[in-house]
Length: 299
Image 1 (cartoon, rainbow, N blue to C red):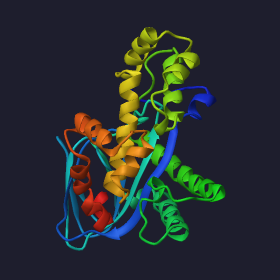
Image 2 (image 1 turned 180 degrees about the horizontal axis):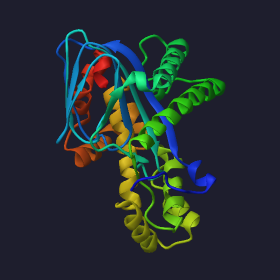
Image 3 (image 1 turned 45 degrees about the vertical axis):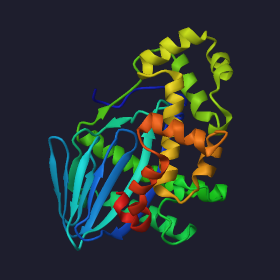
């Protein structure tokens, strides 16, 4: 589907627009990185120096200095030259269901000189992160570090001005936009309820039924038709995303993560995590260990 979806303003206000990280660093010589499940969230690189190659299922992108790449969805393999230096941005621009507003199946490669303001505003964001957070804390937006509300608003303002250019570039390149499939807003209200419920409070069954005015069977059917999964599985997906982010991008103890997700013990959390991922929490943390030692590898 092409063209920007037309929705009431209050629906646009419900989108998740959130910067996850931004950093500007050299890459370890010869680094290789395989990225999976890049269907939720968006990744952007600007290559300052060196060379980089990104290979997806049907496309290979060759980056030279001064080029931007909006990374493709799904799995890809990355190879950097010894002198590579990358400005990396990861953010969310999603419907309440967690689906990206804009699809980027093949990736988008272009010269930075064509859109100079994209880099200018990205640099402003990166400097703001460096100013307000401890140096080297590239995952500031994924941590529990207390932050002044005015600082958050400054970050958000910088991010949204950058995001506007990112959207415009997609529009100029015949972007594929997603949107909700039906005109029924009750599944959307249910998704909002799920997103707003703290993860340690348990599945919000009664609030969901009260918010939508539906029976559980009817809600499950509508939600499945709209989003492709049940409310319960959507809730587990949200919790799992939080757990993976904590394990891969922080040193937060597993016991603390399990508590934040409402589990009675870290053992219960480990069983749940392995059932959904096929991995133990420690194995997931090991995969993300290079990101903690060499943050730039988390591109």
